[in-house]
Image (cartoon, rainbow, N blue to C red; front, side, top):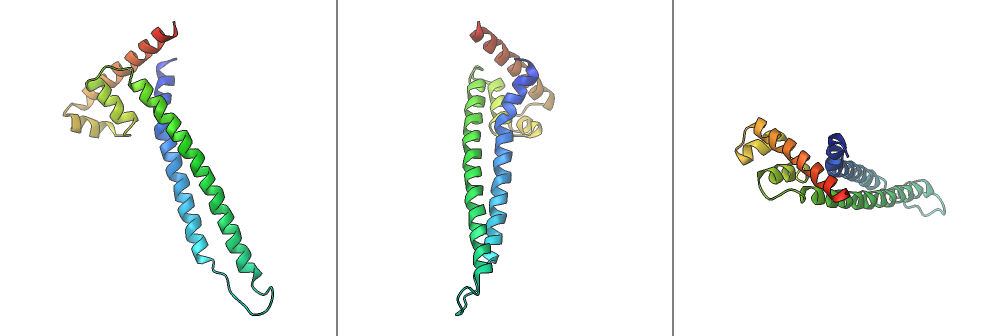
Length: 143
């Protein structure tokens, strides 16, 4: 595995999280639309089937979106487990903390530096060292 491939693996949870957030936004939009569709009741038979059909279609779309969200949740859990396993290869300490904050908490470099009381450059050095350490451990485990 190359350093770039490792970075992409580590970013996997963040991408899955953002995908899930987008799908949740779509669900909220569908629910909002469904709330605006109200059946009109009429005493004449079959006189209001248009609105009832719209409501039925909206509910079907919501159910489908909820299935998509469940799949996204499963993918996020899978990605998080993979990232946790990679970060767990590092010894406890600042290097591991930087990797956890970046790839599990999705923090920006500036925030990591500020909260750990390091310079931005030092955080990047720890990150590079962490990537190299994970790659070395993976190589040793393979053979």
